[in-house]
Image 1 (tube, rainbow, N blue to C red):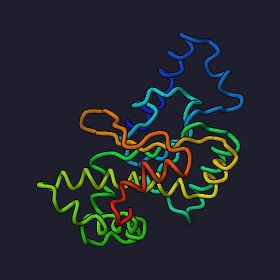
Image 2 (cartoon, rainbow, N blue to C red; image 1 turned 90 degrees about the horizontal axis):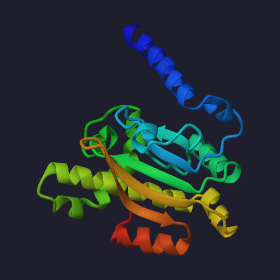
Image 3 (tube, rainbow, N blue to C red; image 1 turned 180 degrees about the vertical axis):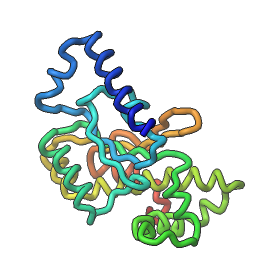
Length: 215
């Protein structure tokens, strides 16, 4: 219970500090939300997206799952995406992976983890398709890091093919798609691909990196 009580204590401190600097801090945010970003990230507890980006309450719409996956059949994610794009009119959709991702690490091996194996199948397919490239790295850590990147690129590509994004682009609207990786060892974000906002950029920035084997 000590850890749980600490959450409530931290919450009260957060409220007190926010109100001291801005008495209307919460009142203004209690109305309509108008976020600039939808971030699709990993559920890993070491990746506190609002904290590491400095995003204020109301700036970032967030969806998290194991290894930041975008499945065309995932109604949860697709519902979040549709609401973010068609209702909230977010300008940016970000896929944020991270180094030392347990889901990606698990997908590199042959051990069975039960139900989650179904979730990791797409990453395992990326690992298989890119086996020649990944095998050229000298160390396991380098292969691990590169697979994290390839997984992010796959998910940005998957986003670009969804009807929600395709229809938005046909209307000449946003969003712009971005892929980035967070390094939990130094706390820094690193860009992989930025400003994908039409099919031509999908071709130039994403399909070019598929190296003929696909994500």
